[in-house]
Image 1 (cartoon, rainbow, N blue to C red):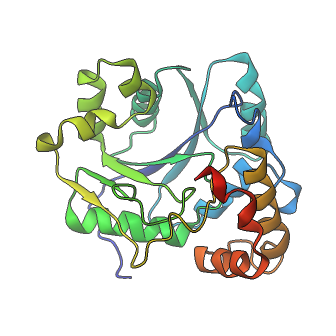
Image 2: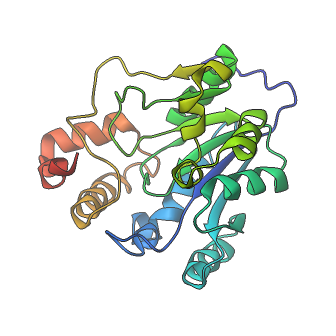
Length: 246
């Protein structure tokens, strides 16, 4: 990978996280590698990035999310607290505060993401000079390796023009509804892994799979990559536990 020419642009990663999942409450703080919360594992896996200038955990002002703030303070991770329902506003205000020119969007239910994967994504975005890049249209990577990246001007347009509750809850739907206004791209894998594997954290069975991955790979290499995960899943067949949720 060639060195990215950033042109004085500050690239930040905003990880949205909350305790109030209806399907698996408190999932982001479940135990992962080295007995640390999965949210901390995710932060550490992204912190080796060559391109990210700052990683921020963006949580809500709800009392229940004090637990996330406590963990951030314990591990010296930057955090931001914002609107519970308007995630778009939370991202916008967070990007303003930390002066991000380019924003990588990550959700805390993707605790297996890692810096090499992210850096390829960022590099592709900057090389093509997109306003918005996703790897989910169509999906070719396993759910749990979901990424979106956009420039601040695009985020600001979303903030100013998104009116529907759904558009505010999910940050980027306004872009998808107004394709002609933005330069968009999709980051694809050579082979389609989406239906074969599931690496996101939504249900108890998802956690059992993710914890087993950490139990088997973390001690060998703390920042194991997607190829290592797939080899392990193919060998262990544990992904049969949660693939039904895809």
